Image (cartoon, rainbow, N blue to C red; front, top):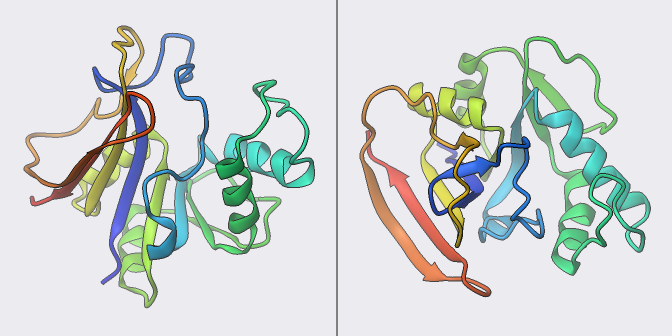
Length: 192
């Protein structure tokens, strides 16, 4: 069975976004979790997908220009990811979205369809986000691994990555290592 692996960039206090609704401490949104060689699909929630599609399409169309959403120049790693993902299937869990610009995008209408996707042949699936969907899939027992890049700050107010998780979920540490600068990379397998 394919693994569903969440990758998120968080503050030390577990926030995935600050009080203004975004993670202003994240400098690049590239896939920095070491997943690329092991995945052949991405899964996103309907709330996140439109902005994700807009962000990466802008980078694909004009990699040498500042991004319209941030005003920042894309990093080399972001440009690599932007070149890779147009051909990668993207699945969007949404009961409302019906159209996507990317031809390899398919809509899933229920958590049961996510479970069915995991049963299909293929490599692992990168669970990109957002937080509400990750929480729902953890609660449904469908997330196999959580990879975090922890940023050295206490964000305080904002949205916690695990807000809304039902009950206790045991985790086994798979890997812990320092990253660039003061970042820390953590990987956990969900055991229950």
